[in-house]
Image 1 (tube, rainbow over the protein chains, first blue to last red):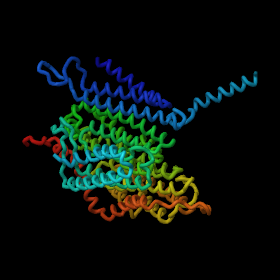
Image 2: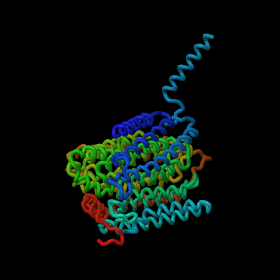
Image 3: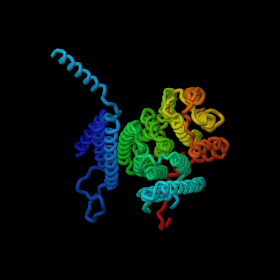
Image 4: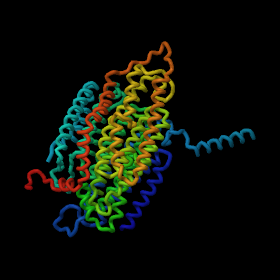
Length: 130
Length: 508
């Protein structure tokens, strides 16, 4: 089970980092959310992985799992949920005020501007040809 | 068990909720209630300051659970200084906000202000790393609201960067906390210190990595190189009282480094003792140099002030990285100085911004401000103090730090960076001052410059007056900071005080 959990955390973190580095606000929000999921699973795994054992005192129990990481994860989930809601609202505000969903508030990224220019040049050429 | 410790956290929380319910009563009522709340907070922090300076630890066990099973709040000399500093700063910033009507520009300014203080006070008092995370989130969420208060394109853009980098910082915080809990099995700072002492050799690498990851997180908050890029924009484009209040925000990161790393990776941590010091010192040297270059390159006064605040963070990181009692004592002195004067400079930049009409605070020739002699001389005194020229407090702080660095192997590098960055800053603020006040163009005959706001200006004078006071009372104050530094290095008595605190109603 350990390798599965570790792989899940690694994939979530990798995707989260990749998306956070994107230039548009929506992928960034998704990236931050994925990072938050990854860290929640990580925190949970830090209490050591056990299945079928209770976290609270039970007469019949032979062993216990650590309840503290579960409490920490609950807190972390609530906080990351609130923060995600906030950052989505802020991204929408930025979209409407800056007129663009680019994280730097630019109308276009350089790549897109280059693509646009190329497109318009092609249009011009096809226009003159016609 | 100390009720005062709990009161200092509960007062801003209850105050914030009260102000929220007072909203229908109108902004005037909110203002009066808020000012009296801040007044009570200043009194409470003064009491806390004097009682903590008896030298003991006042410990509050939340839920009456004995440490390390419950969360503890610890009031000691360092946290009491930070609390007093926050309350003083808040009173100046709030006064300015009320007198310039900044609080009318959007909703819930007063509520967010109190919640910000709630987060700050909690972060300064908590003795538990996860609880520190929670208070960080509270102060960050309030700061997001305050940063965006009033709105505007530049503010929204700076706010977006600030929010995203802090969200990533929070995630890293949780990774570090999780890794530390996985190995040490506790999150109480005092108990972690004990656990690190008894750490088996094979676990050292993980704990060191988690500890340094935690340093990265605190570095984001403190604006340490290379994580400072969010600061100049965020501070330059928010409203002036908020920027003034945020002067304490970078210091929260520095406080967390002193508290968490100083205690967990303290003298008794064996092979892991002071693993963070050299990193902090190196980052401080680079931050100072880059901040000085930023001061030179700024084209807008508020941005220049933001870089001056960043330069003071660099100096503080150097002092913390020097890792000696004398240096830490100097750091605490310099921290008080740079927080209050940085805040005053942000407020003054706003006065200049308002007085110059269309030119704002761009560093170009424009019409003079209404009272060039008053504003100009206050500007001169503030930048003298901020860049560390004699005779004001910045000079004393830098001298103390350099004095503590004399025996350090990197002394020449430290001396070079502190002096060169100081020189660069003096040159550029002198250029700014002459542009703003000497080479002003003649105003057009019909355009009378708007009169300055005397009552609002009182907040700046009040914050400025702390600088000569810090110099006049340098002797008793440095005695206080020395005691504080000694107490911070004595992590053994911190640990025993926290772990031996017994719940109410239980025999000792």
